[in-house]
Amino acid sequence: MNPEYDTTARVRTITLSTHAPVRIREADWPIVSQSTHTDDRGANAEETTWIKIRRHSDGRTVVYGGCDVVHRGLAVQAPALRGGELLPAGGDVVAAIWRLARELDAPALCTREVIAKLPPVEI
Image (cartoon, rainbow, N blue to C red; front, side, top):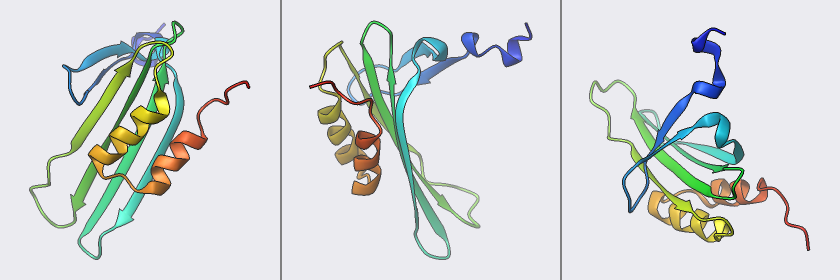
């Protein structure tokens, strides 16, 4: 198989807010929910906030996201903001999403959408 197209070999480094970054194999940590919100900041800027949730088969979950601001016409851009949390199996994913959203100053629409897209919980 051509390694360029081998998704089982794809590795991603994820920035965490209070710990060193983690490196995951994407095939082992599928995305279970995600949301992106873009806010036009006028003629010269655009802000995109995104949040993703990945879950390992053992129940661990990584909640991570970022905020990118693009200033049109400028050679130098604002640095991207990144953050996230690695939760143990059974960790409170929704609480972690809200903490990350506050850290990123994420729009409520983005935050509520990523929560709504989580797999449902049996009751």
